[in-house]
Image 1 (spheres, one colour):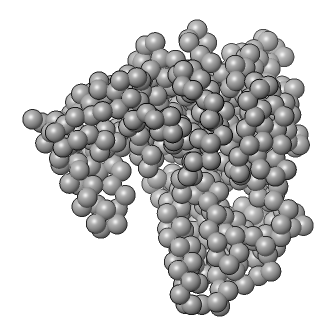
Image 2 (tube, one colour; image 1 turned 30 degrees about the vertical axis):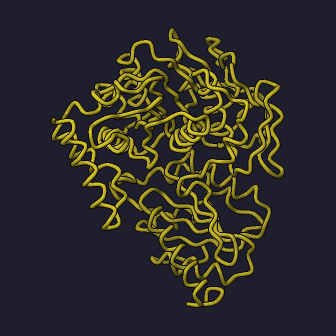
Image 3 (cartoon, one colour; image 1 turned 180 degrees about the horizontal axis):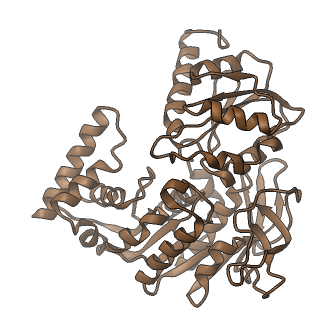
Length: 449
């Protein structure tokens, strides 16, 4: 009875939340857990084929939701927290929403994105069969602390999930260490693709002996073909490797020399997301013969290189830590069109109050001959403007209004506008972009005037 009451309360809460414009991805779970603290444990036992979780600093939402799309395309029923609420209350919401009002859950797979620091708390409620770890970078230092703390928390969670099959990024030395002595498969990119430009690296030192690592080649941050010249620790044998990478038009590459991938995605890092999904499906024994059509069906979450037409293409991207920002900058620079760029930085609780990480971003690489204007905004607009000053990158406009910033860019002769934001600026920026789009369609203003 408590289970059914919890599900009813969660569903009613979700309806009420949506009526007032909330996404209702966590609060319904909070309510359900108060009524029935074991609701996740009870409902997760009804998952027939397996529970797969995705952790990691960057890419976990895309990887998780892409994996869910692939499983749905194959005809499976799933439970998925696809709105990105990745702590215990978000997991409870996903299970409650997937259940009937009689408390019945019918699902082949549970596909769950899990916050790294919350994994051990989630695993107290359910035991995953498969676990993907995408990468580890510094993120929200005031919440997570340095990476070694996150490593300890994940090791604790993995030890709780006895027998879990790990799918790990074999190019990330910080992620590879979780596979030692465990049932693990590795994915990676087995050729040099990008220019070997000096870049700030997160995990510079060998996880075994502490000596500085070396690379045959690297992709970004600490990801690449790494080895330790002191103790011999090195990149593992890759089970699912990408070669023949071509980023000149659509994103093309080959997996294990026989599976051709061709998708219209932006961002080199998406190769890792796609590889993670292909690897997971293969380990799970799911048919991957229609993998390209699975990818084509996927609708990216908000702010993952999301293109909105405002008379010219305006591309919104979430970048919330040094590694993510460096990849966003690289994607912007690979676009040879004349471009305007807007950068918004907030410091609310969900962003992390500490913005010192801005000094670990290679903002100097944002300057090239195709950069038309640069605008800064957000709560910490002066901090980011100062950071650009020290990077010798000229800021053309500083404003507290995102709407003003976008409208100003729509008046320029640039061919495209990129809007790079951290977490709490994301949803409000998308809302602003959609408002401008509506104004354009209804004649509210023309070309930003």
